[in-house]
Image (cartoon, rainbow, N blue to C red; front, side, top):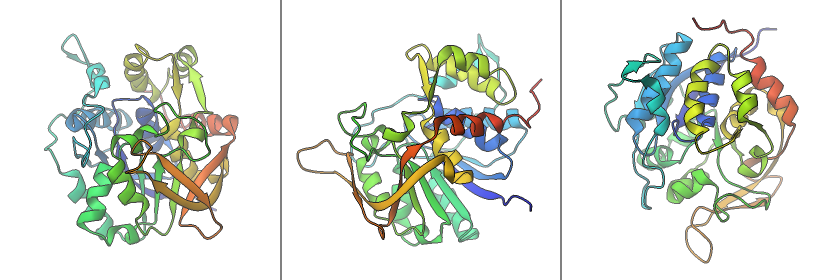
Length: 306
């Protein structure tokens, strides 16, 4: 029986943490993945779009790419730059060919039109601050109900301390957008949170060894920028993507997610109330080896780049 194809819209802050680039490379390489479009969010969204363009070009795929909001809805910007874009050229020489002409602020309308043109068939995968999605759901409140599913790398739900005093980074960077997105009426609303994604990682030396082929080669150049300040890669965003195609890589539970906006805790902190009939599904466990096998196995069928 032929494997079904998943049409995916990817919303990403690629260019900060390296896991976004790994997630995009996986979606480009994975058999059965049909990228309907990529939108970028957070500081320097045009440079983030250029990184996405470089990976799509390396894969030989023409994917629509649109730059989105550079600023959160109400709070201050926490990641104003996209440092990994510096790796696209070395000493003025283009290392990885890419487009650079991305008009600002086209992402939300692109998402809106694409979803309305194919109702019920698109998975929206968001792996950065949720600003674009929050704006989209406010502008057109019917959009959430037109999605096949919504998959987020967002939140922390199991009581595991996060890196940011209780609030996971994507929720922290735009808590008001996160609140809008978690309140949206989506038929399938899945989150893969920090407390689970932290269990899947490799160190820099292993990454350098593994990223020597195919679409992982341009990712390695981007990763070297990341390794200036970090010694490991944690597969936050790729785990959310892999769960679309292989949901058994994680164990999920149903319930209700809340996002703190006021009160004594930091805005963006997520809460989790288990309930069999809850509107949200969150990852509560992961099989790390099964994930790594699924992730790297997707690149086995892709020819090495020249």
